[in-house]
Image 1 (cartoon, helix red, strand yellow):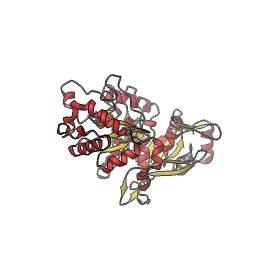
Image 2 (tube, rainbow, N blue to C red):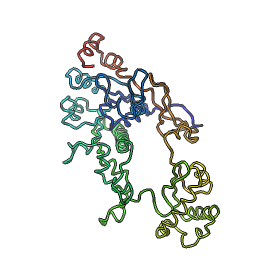
Image 3 (spheres, rainbow, N blue to C red):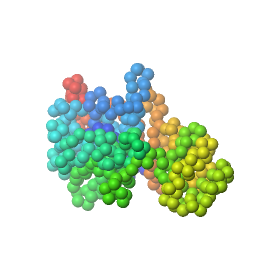
Image 4 (cartoon, rainbow, N blue to C red):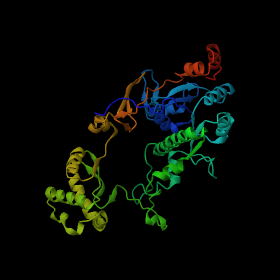
Length: 407
């Protein structure tokens, strides 16, 4: 069992999170690194608290499971940025911060007096990390976008899906996750640079480029066909002859016998189990490219084999034979996954009104220590500590601002 001591290398770093859901993961990761992440929400809570999937509360309300899993460890304060007094409090907080996370364009931020240039002029040591659909420069810098828009704009949708159908959109918020991880890397590099120069800087990240950078088909590993203008082809659930996703009695497995020895092991299994001696013929031996002309035949044999097994049984036998294979897990399967349990991969906390909630820890370990986050914040739970303790706002003034809708 991996140790459970918490490692917090960035304890003392204060981060003000002004972003919407695009940078939610970045704040979560920085919190896991030990930073104090202060999430600024409008009075009553931000829209991220209503992002699906929603879990029902005993009082008839709902809570976002997505928000709960990305807000853990952050501190919540409320402030109405569209009210001068609320915006002034946030600017005063930023003057005492190391990092600001933002995902709005300059025009929007400028209306609140929160444009990066203004913030950095007031606090020269400030690092402003920005994630927007197309970055803060260039002809598209003011265009609106989303996770799916970034996938489309990056070229990454082209190779996803069946070859005779429209491109298939991936689920989840993978683009935002990629951009958030770029934001974490950029932020920490800027923190290191500040230690040498004494000055902060703007870290500008484009969601379009974040997806471009992680997508093999349209990113750093362009295929020869892409470079000659033919473009990538959609291959559906297959990744080559006898490689790809295959059905089992209770789901799917991903099978990737690319190398010669891996195919030899699979061919021997097909011969043993199905009695198809032709599978071991020399014509099929070699790397995956050798088998491409025989894809339909080989895929049929493999599907006959996988269809005899439950996915976990096939996985264990394939791994015993040293054939790269993965079971296509349902999310609920992961709660009982023996590998995740052995490495202490889950954080768990009691969420008021919801009950115990599990979410993945950060997948980093240092000398057997894990990175961990704190509990999920209630709306405005840090108002007294931040507005009162840090900024010195008196109780009666906080009450007046709250009554006026500013907090």
